Length: 567
Image 1: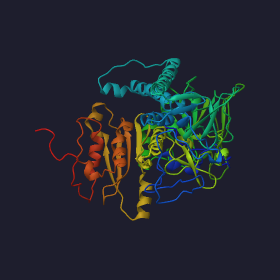
Image 2 (image 1 turned 135 degrees about the vertical axis):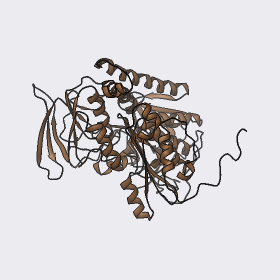
Image 3 (image 1 turned 90 degrees about the horizontal axis):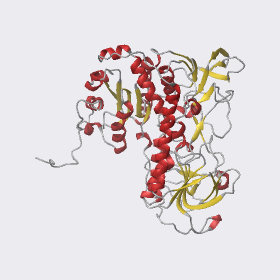
Image 4 (image 1 turned 180 degrees about the vertical axis):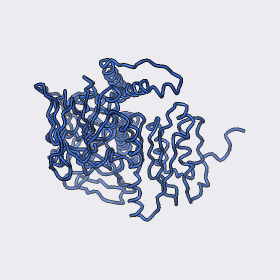
């Protein structure tokens, strides 16, 4: 489950400037399409240097070296690199730093693994694995088509919950052991920046310890965003953190928000027997997806299931169940702001996205002001202070900077930063980072949606073409009796540039990487058409997709292999 800003909020309120994601940022960051600066270089010769174009990015030695000692900067360092936050982003950065020869420490005030491992991607995949099996076993038509006879399927709620918890524990242990084995120091406590290249950490009630590092990465992640007017009790009004524990399966649950989080939990709850009501602030469900894919997904994932929905409304007030009364939800029209309806349900899941966890970091000690809770950074993840200057030797990755709130994006950003501090300039190509929603069937995407691509084309003066292939034409999908699905390619017909790929269907989350890697490497459609795919496999959905595109430019004349490898 990818914890991105969701598509729905309870009401259009003026929020404090800490720890909140705003609706105006939703569609771009939801799909990971907020483009980063590319082709720029920046100089950071001193603490007062402003971001500038056309000068080389700074490089760093991989040795612990003395600094000038000005402005409280230490003259020697305990570590080459200190990472605040041991989630997926921090873990990825730490492992790459050790590979590069850096003496590395990671500070964690909770448990290793962060949101993804403990309260997000990992346990949610365990629940979704159960929902997938249940859904298949409950589909009598599907079973008969395969020649199978299955008696009524049931489940043990506690055993399902234990499966999710055990998986999180196992992955958390794997991450911890991998860092220890490589020599990463795991420092337990909450990290606070106290000055340039200096961090303190400790537990409440204990004396803090101060450590120094040549470079520091902030990787503190995010927490569930709960809009004003919603009272969360952790039992009947819950966030994804609570829902993943699966302490009970309500007969009727309202889900506020129809983004990744809401869609995945609707898949889980309906498979386990719940009725679901979506509450969405915008006029249609899943507005962050490519519209064509969204319509198909609604026809398959929403309409046939025990799901109804209210769109164009805010959940202005939600009161938990108490004193024998159900959960009460007050709905307000998003446009007129007038009361529209009152719902009484057994439980409500608040799936309105994530907010950056940046309070208590001590950013004020280095003159850094957050923007809606996010730490401002440039295209190389370098932190920018309140005066617009780059803060030397300080970086921020993952949900805390808000550029792309996906676990794998955080890890990629961390690796990119390590490349920079060891002397190799690197800018992550964010538009090539894929995203996925693990419903049944799955949804995946990379790059622009069709409306975004057409807007870009109009501004830059080029054409946009669309190619599509159906899973119904794929042998492997038909063998699985899973022919419901579509792959969509958005491209520039003049030069073969891939602008976006969207997939809805069996194992879509696995299939998207051929497209995302092609985009990352700059591979054009006229060249990738010559790639060979094993038959019969689902990968042929992408093979047919690229082959169906009509590109005017010829294939590249060069080939990575000039001669046959063998006769």
